[in-house]
Length: 288
Image (cartoon, rainbow, N blue to C red):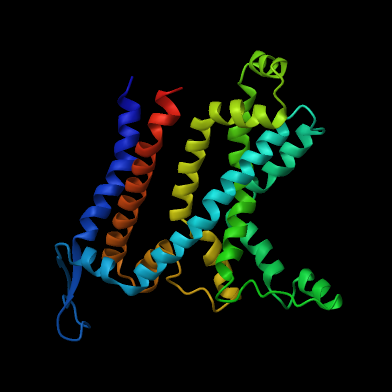
């Protein structure tokens, strides 16, 4: 029964990882001017590609930007998703179905398309918001400037990701037995007390799951800055770690360095996710 799953795992998970590991331990050795036949050959490089990746100032800077990006996106996304889920689960909310679809709809838009849409809204020469602010005599901020572009990228991620996380939390809320709410209300608890003391603690595993999803998506940010890059000089080709991997592999044709950087990113994602889960699992799962 497990054979098909094992075959798929080997073909589409294990094999690419092993091949990337092999590439990350190699490099191209050039002899002479590198023009003749046999002047370039692949040799064993040991861990030199990893040392070069970790010591590259561009990679270190990109990690710092992603760290700041994560501090903006992850807590904001979880708070907004939780607030929307609690509001939709409230007895006083009307048009729940319509509101749920409207909040979730941006998640169905591909990241490249949403980045293009927001890019046109950010671009001062075509942005209707800039025209409106100018007509009102209000100075419009340039969201594509070096100091603001990370917030512009974070806004696109929030716009597309809040709906998905909200649906996960809302589904967990709908699974809570209604008699728990009735007992709490008989004891005099209001909507806010029910939300804080009953709903949020019960759906804590869903909160943790969405936090891990958001953390992984943060470390893999690529489509948004890559799509906005032609619109501004504030985004370099190494703005995020994955953009550096793309540049090394397809612009510099150095797949060995790109493979080493990819392995470093994958290990970082696994370590952070595992550490986060270890920290919160006792409270989130064992006590429940």
